[in-house]
Length: 242
Image 1 (cartoon, rainbow, N blue to C red):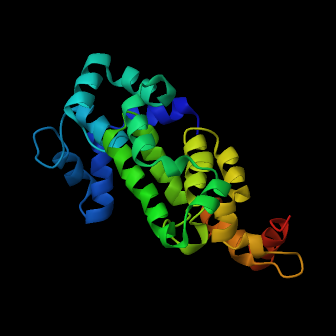
Image 2: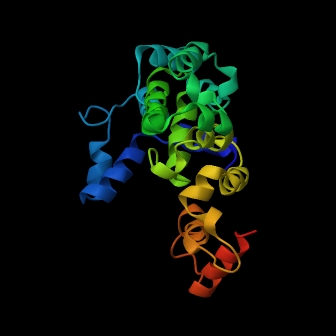
């Protein structure tokens, strides 16, 4: 999805967008949900500034509210869609100081992390993720990192990926979070974390492991009801053996 399209979707989503979600999950009628979403009701704000912050960040703060009111919603969102323009040096320094091991290469992690520290190493990535959600000024970027981490999912912590999951976060998810999905999908398919997590590293033309080939179709791209059959799924696994 183009950045301009993402911007228009986020910026144009008013309070009735929340009503649509409510009507779909709580069994109320669209009319009653729309009425409830009008300014003045307790469960949703009438402020479009606050509404945008609640959708595009991990929650409004005094600083982010002051920024969006100073800049205007359009300019604020444009800046969030171009995170490199936002000075996030304080958060970056915090992550580097507290979790320097997350910037090691995979061979460095393999050489430096003892067997007893493997799970704490992965837990550090989770703690760094929470820290970024709290302190990063690049809030929309961090939300997209979370979204794509869930979509192209490699569980953390899990025993197969202790030495590669931090690298997957950096070189696949964070690198492509606001880029092209095709680029992220290819990077994911080639990364050691995904190769081991979904068993594609064990797959061969003689004994294809169908796990990744199936998940590539069911979860990562067209969906479980995408119109393919078992034979085509098997061909997907064969193709992904290389």
